[in-house]
Image 1 (cartoon, rainbow, N blue to C red):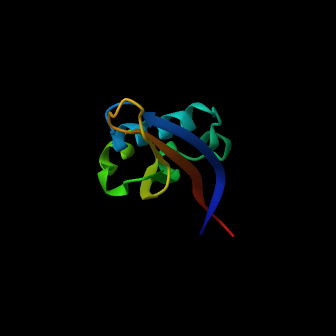
Image 2 (cartoon, one colour):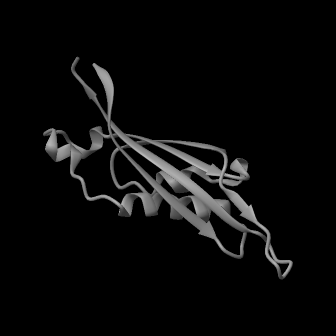
Length: 114
């Protein structure tokens, strides 16, 4: 069986005042998920638990993201989360903590016959 990607969604999230990279990442993933209502598992007659979900998050400080909180966003499927350097930290004019922006790409795949 070969892994076949069927869907990719993109999202953006932010933490406006707390410099919370995990919060920004969770919001980016949630944003990406809200953009679709495609029932891939049902379309292919597969259980939802069979979905292979690859998640890539870009933030300026990848080490500050709690991957377990990202995985917890998914009610089913098999998420694998990778956090990489990306996104933006935007300085605030009032001297407060920077605004954090995270980007997410979510790809859904199934193991399919050749």
